[in-house]
Image (cartoon, rainbow, N blue to C red; front, side, top):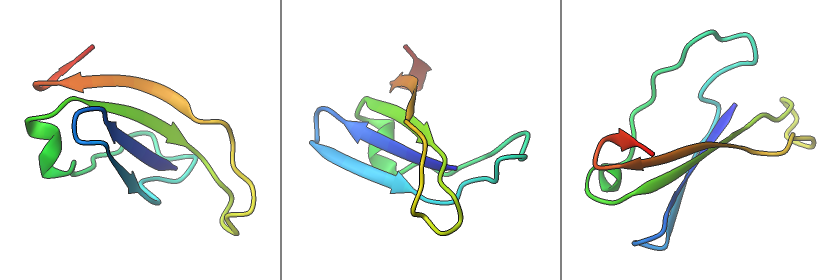
Length: 69
C-alpha cells in the first residue's frame, strides 16, 4: 500500500511508499512536518510488487489541525 498526501496551501505532494502489505491489519506512519500546520488530503492505493499494476486511489479524508474532516 502507498499513501499520497496533498497540501492545497503549499502546493506540495508527498508519497509514502510501501507502508503496508495487503494483509496488514494496522499501520502506523510518520507524517511529514508540514502536516502539523497545513491541511492535508490523504489518498491510499495498492500496487503489485513489480509496480506495473495498481488500483484506483481511495480518498481517506482531510487532516486539518490534527482533526479529520
